Length: 289
Image 1 (cartoon, rainbow, N blue to C red):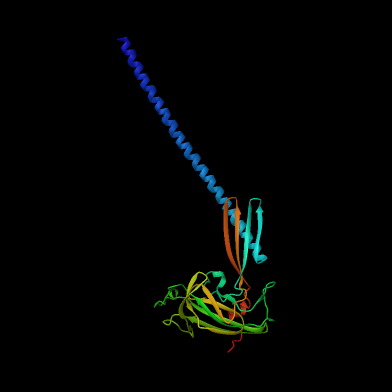
Image 2: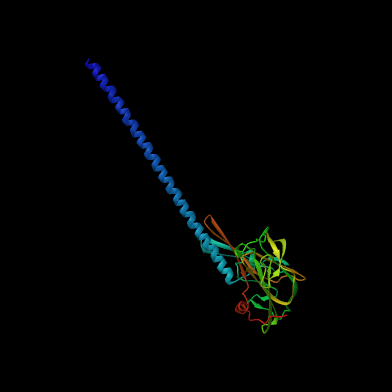
């Protein structure tokens, strides 16, 4: 009888020991799982933080390349460094020279009511001054704008209308002999007014975009530049010439910054200074006939 009781106690103790061992193993497994999860998350956070920091350094390097190129524009490649592991490469390309079809403003969207210049006369690259000693351009100019498939909406809200475009042509042979003409082209006859001229619907691919509308042909003599201003809404604008080619319109600057394994790229367009801006804005030129 005593032996049976002792045997039963041993079995209970063995079972309890097994339970304790199992609980200990489960606790160890849970602890390891939690620990590994925390460690993995910490490693991921550290890696993400490092990548973000390197990305910001690469962006700063790219911006430094842009700033340097804007201050000293030279066609070609240049490079520089901010630290042993952070640097940039900058590519500067002249835009417009010899072309007869181009997207204005480097292909960027032109905000409503803000003007962008299309140069017809050459500029002195050292000081951005107009070379009046060179005869002004004689050419046929057509401007294109709008979005492919855009149509005239029979709507009283101007924000729903396709863009119209104001065109200011500046002519002259010297800084003391300058005149201007103005016209506004609107593709929609349902709300065209105030002396606006009609525009044609003629989808034209330019620089990877299809522009929906175009002005009538503008015959220009002694041309210095043309200012194009979107009306009603922002839009892309393209220019096309016949009988001549465009001079330089400015520079497309692309800067790639690198830091560690991170790489960031920035591209900007640097045009020439907007000449006669106060006078054009307030219409102080004497209109030519």
